[in-house]
Image (cartoon, rainbow over the protein chains, first blue to last red):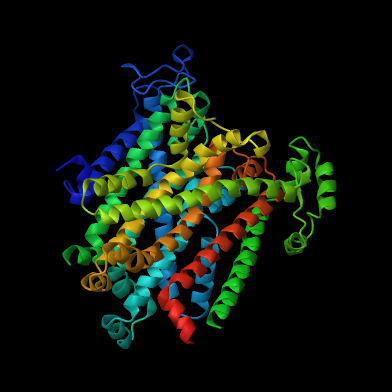
Amino acid sequence: MSVLAMPRLRVPSPLALGGTLLAVIVAATLVGIFVTPYDPTAFSVRVRLQPPSLLHPFGTDEFGRDVLSRVLAGGHLSLATGFGAMLISLFVGVPLGLIAAFHRGIVQEVIMRAVDLLIALPPVLLGLLVLAVTPPGLGKTIAAVGLVYIPILVRLTRAVALGLLEEDFVQAARARGEGAIPILWHEILPNAWPPIIVECGLRVTFAILLGSALSFLGLGPQPPASEWGLMIAEGRDFLTQAPWVCLAPGLCLCVLLVSVNLVGEGLREKLDPQLRGRAHG
Amino acid sequence: MHMAAFLLKRIAGLLGVLLGMSVLIFGIVHILPGNVAYAILGEFASPAAIATLEAKLGLNDPLPVQYWRWLSAMLQGDFGMSLVMSRPAAPLIAEALGRSALLAGFSFALIAAGGIALGLYAATHHGRTSDKVLTLAQFVLIAVPEFFWAILAVLFFASWMNLLPATGYAPMSSGVASWAAHLVLPVMVLSFGLVAHVSRLTRSSMLEVLDSRYVLAARARGLPEGRVLWRHALPNALLPAITVLAIDAGLLIGGIVVVETVFAYPGLGRLLVFAIERHDLPLLQVGMMVVTAVYAVANLIAELLYAMLNPRIRVAGATA
């Protein structure tokens, strides 16, 4: 079993591999909020732009700040963007999708036309537009990225729920005279979860990508925060002399994205009935 | 007949989306308290000066009146003035749009050709080492943000190898070689991740088609493998790829914003980021409208292409 075959042969399973990696990253960045080898914001003129060494494994930046400490201290910002935005689109998108599926007519029209409108703007631009007119910050980045992905979850949830509404057990509940909320909550939602969870896994990856891109453009957390996208943007001016200032947060970002992606793929293999069927047939 | 009705309906939908988007863009920009005058005059302006300017620019009128003035001017081809540069916005945007289109056109051609070719190769060599390498490469490529690709590309090709210019844009008049050299890195970075995306999808849809009964039937009739692949399998396998290319057009527009910023390439994406940084709201508004329109038209083209290539829709149209 070569390393190359890993994603397809599932040895170890993507879920286990990605989950372990992700757990390590989450643990390291959570600890990093409180404890880092050096103070991530302390200037130290004598050790400006030092290459990686035993004292500074990832080197130092233009202010003599320890890059490893900054990476550790800033990681939770990327994680918060990814998971926070996913949760926003989940908690807004799923109820809207359910309502749109249940109330045909004017309510559905309004919701779905709003969704069409939001989807008509490329994701980065929708984020830019929201962040353009207000001073940037972590909370606003999360909200903007979450807003971008709400339409996708509305459409998905509605499609799944429309299929389920035709099922016998839902018709039975209707015949019993149950109201909209009990039907949606007890009959539809428990059966609609698998594709929604799979989509959420994907959304976390895309949200981290989009969030880091926005903060690379200066529309995320502001200095001296060490969000990884922002660190890369700041390190650009010294790219030739001190590439490690960009490379360290960049590679960490890639490892984070690969691990979230692996977890997403793993979830899909476990939960997506279509994929499962194909694997057997 | 069917096709014409379909087309009319889609164009009406497109106009609806653009109208809705103009409300959304205008709304978001103007929800904040009158900062246009503030943005022109700077933070040390006296309240009296701000009030005079607001009156002059019509900023005290009710929002719907302002919106209507903006929209009707835009429909008549008047795109307003850039506040920061004190120049009409239309030529600024047209110039930047042209340069962005250059970037997008080259990238899109590379994505479509490279993605489909790689995907077909992987599908027809299913299970071999090359297929596995490609699958892993796609997996990694998708997980690397564009701006990090850009950094790596600049580091490798500009700083270390000294092969290509790191940033900027050279007009055609300064020589074709220089012009092309400035385009190579941005196009490469823009295409990387999306080539992976398209090839991954082409591969899986081709595998599915190769597994289908009509391909089995074609082979059973003893048709040469090349004919089976090109005439029977490929057209069907390409349908999902076209849908994905349309989605990717959106990602490409997003990528352009980031890539133009990294490479200091004077296109529309960089102009928008500039407008945001300098609070040039009139420029931002029309710039956003132009990008939205381009994106909507690209989506419409993809949908028409899909309808034309899809035999089921085509046949339905012919018989009706």
